[in-house]
Amino acid sequence: MEKRRNVLRELIDDGKPTIGTHVHSMWPGIAEVIGHAGTMDYIEFSGEYAPYDLFSLENFGRAVDLFPQMTSMIKIDQEPRTYISVRAIGSGIQNLLFTDIRNVADAEECVRAARAETPEDGGIVGVGMRRDVGYVLGAGSSEYVQQLRDGVVALMIEKAGAIENLEEILSVEGVDMIQFGPADYAMSIGKPGQFGDPAVRGAHERAIAAAMERGIRPRVELASFEQAKPWIDMGIRDFCVGWDVRVIYQFCRREGEELAKLLGR
Image (cartoon, one colour):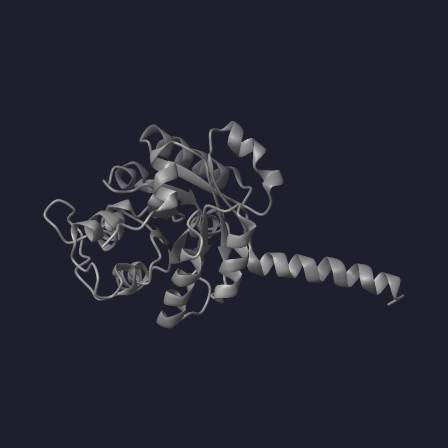
C-alpha cells in the first residue's frame, strides 16, 4: 500500500501557512466544487453541527481524494468522540478537530483516538478493512501506521476548564493545532453572546500565545479574508474561512433584498 499524502501535515511540517473552509453539507458535489476552485488546502466538515451518516463520510472522503492538492478534516462532537474519529479516519478523512476539551484527560483521549495502537504511538486505532487502506490492500501495514501519525490533531479551546488547564493541555504530546471558541467560552464563564468581552478576548490571546510558545499552531476562523490582517500581524498563519450555510444565507439575503427593491416590493 502506498502511503496517502496529507497536504495539511506537509504544510505544517514545512512551516507554511494553511487555508481551509467549512462545510455543513456532506454532498460530495460541494467538496468537488471547492476542489475545482484550487485555493483551499483542506475542507473541514463541521460534524459537530450537521447531520450525517457513515456512508456520507466515505463519499465525502472520495470526493476530496479527487484533488491531490487538498485534504480533509472533521470537527467531532464531544461524544462519542472516539468512535467518530476512528470511523472518520477509516473513511479517508485525515485530520481531526476535537471539540469541548476541558482538561488533560480529554486531550490525551483525543490523541489516542487518532493514533495507532503500537508501543511507540500509544493510540487505540487498530487494523480495519476500511476505505483509507483500500479495504484489503494495506490494513495493518507500516504505511498505515505512518498515515495515522501524519494526521493533524487539533483541539478546540472553548471551555472555562480548558483555559484553566491550558498549559497542561498544550503539553500533551501529539497536539498539533488549537482553535479558540469565543462563543462557547463566553457561555461557559456566564457571559453568553458577549464575544468581545475583555475576559473572552484575554482568554483568546492567552491561548494563542501559549500555543505559539510550545510550537503548536493556533488556527483562527474567519467569515472573510478581510478579517485576517490583525491576526496575521499577531503571527497567525492558519485560517479556516467561510461556511457553506453562511454563504448561502448572505447570497439569498443580499440578492433577494436588492431584487425586491427593483420590483418595488
